[in-house]
Amino acid sequence: MTARPEGLSAYIAVTAAYWAFMLTDGALRMLVLLHFHTLGFSPVQLAYLFLLYEIAGVVTNLSAGWIAARFGLTSTLYAGLGLQVAALLALSALDPGWGLWASVAYVMAVQGASGVAKDLSKMSAKSAVKILAPKGQGGLFRWVAVLTGSKNAVKGLGFLLGAALLGLVGFVPSVLAMAAALAVVPVVILLRMPSGLPQGRKGAKFLEVFSKDPNINWLSAARLFLFGARDVWFVVGIPIYFYAVLSDGSEAGNRMAFFMIGSFMAVWTILYGAVQAWAPRLLRATERSEAALVGEARRWALALFVVPAALAALVWIAGAPAGWLTLIVVAGLLVFGALFAVNSSLHSYLILAFSTSERVTMDVGFYYMSNAAGRLLGTLLSGLTYQIGGLPACLGMAAAMVGASALAAARLGRERPVRQVPSS
Figure 1 (cartoon, helix red, strand yellow):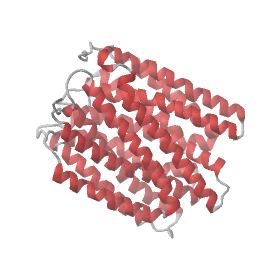
Figure 2: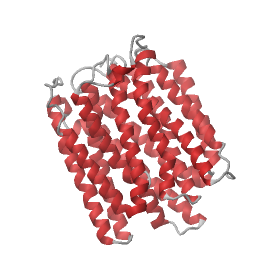
Figure 3: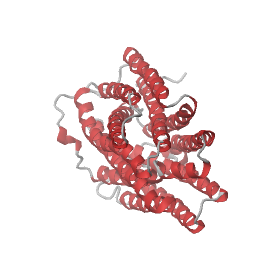
């Protein structure tokens, strides 16, 4: 009988808490996007709703790495879950009688709190993998791939859940129901959390967050542009494009459009998560050195570049939306999702491989600060490019950002010899 790996129980508990959080995170994004679009918000105004969410992520990831190093990973995990419950309750208090910009400011503030919550939870879960994963035979890559892949599959279900709840019960009942369900999770985890996570280091200094390792800095830059390339079409551009194609403006038409948009976002994210979880096998991680996997980061980024570039050209040449064009766009974005997943999985493995156990929360916090900065840039550009040039502009900008990510990935491993991953 195979022995249960040390730390597995704590890994399962952290993963379950992260799943619960990401289900509400995905649902909340769709609720906010679709609800406020039906209230007449423009693409740029919709992007504003998510800006503070992403700005909060930049700040939170820097400070969360230090907080976790100082007070322990469980403290940041509980704080993230609790803050998300508070954000959901606050969003339910939104008054429909408020003016447009008062509503925008309020939702931005609540989304900012949700962004802090998301990145506290994410940094805690990802850092825990470095501590808990078995050493050797690709164990680190497998465990981080399972965590990130399953998380994104759950978030995809959240997109569908949010769209379905909006169509069936409305905005306020939806956020209240999610707040009630999520509030149970930290209580259960608090009572049942196994040992295995570090408790903190009182001497940790904030300036330790900034890494002197060139590989970590270049990887963070590659991550910034990679996630900017996704969100530049994902956050505002594609949902609004699909809404324009699918809805006739009636209540029934809106309900059908919500379901179709939520279904696409869910399928895309679930596919993305499934490929992430499969990436170690696809890349034969147990048989290859860390140096070989570093080289793959550049090659997979170049493969990803082709998809948005081709789609941008096709949509621009077609001119007007059409049924055949929408089908090709959907298929192309699913291919983008699969290639994007391999890139993302490689990055998530490499940041843990490059970091040490002593610095893991600091390095992961800095890396996910760059991730949040990329989402912030992509979110802002998603509304702006769609308003200026429609879907072709969104996709063209995505191609440019993937190209920048590939250039940053090309610098990995040049400044120092990399450690070898033990082979099986």
